[in-house]
Length: 66
Image (cartoon, rainbow, N blue to C red; front, side):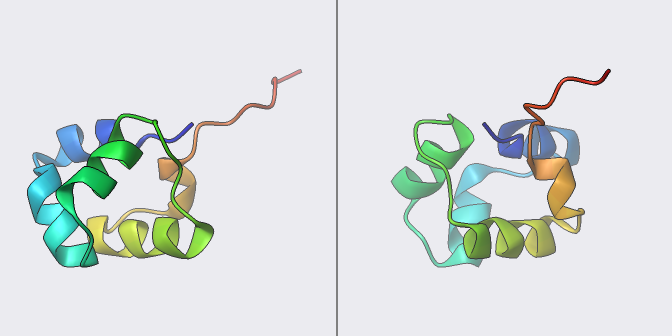
């Protein structure tokens, strides 16, 4: 699971803009945003750079805090 959708909404950025910056199709980016598919680590890193966030902000932790 990723938080790409939440970060895009927080920053007021459209999926089409992100797709253009990544050089990927809108459908590919929409798949990431809707969590239908997960980007490779390299792509996730590139998304973090484009959105100017730490890569950790794009990932939902599955670890339980104890």
